[in-house]
Length: 193
Ligand SMILES: N[C@@H](CCC(=O)N[C@@H](CS)C(=O)NCC(=O)O)C(=O)O
Image (cartoon, rainbow, N blue to C red; front, side, top):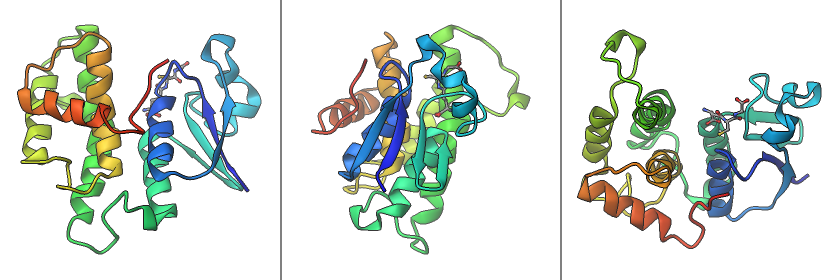
């Protein structure tokens, strides 16, 4: 059975699509437009109770949240080598970066773009400058987060930095700018709109 990606081109659905395209696997796009409120129908809320895009349906399995979708795809197709193997020394850092991308980097980037200023550390994420420091440390000499191996962590972390640029943000970090250029230059790199 073909996987179904519930997708609005003008949304973070592009992150899950990028992952599926990098994996080079078959999937069907189910266009679900936010402007039509198609993500708030009772049918869609049974797939993603949060009423947000994207979501992936694979037979009886439903997956929502980009990080979960990327991890699901990497795990379903281990031969595509889009994640360090379970049990390998890099696996812990991989899982950490996947969660970090959405629990810290994504809200920090959102605050930056929306010009929300708060130094209340109790909320669980840092400001965007500190998040950029963390990504730079993890990227090391690159070219990807796991050296020469491109992984789902590059999709999740990289897509946040790509969005930031797309919305007019300036990273002001030569190393991260070069990383964004490298990711955007990939043949199956994330597209917009
Ligand atoms: N952390 C979520 C974010 C999903 C999300 O916020 N999607 C937006 C589109 S970019 C959405 O569906 N917004 C419509 C709404 O909340 O009504 C993920 O990565 O999947």
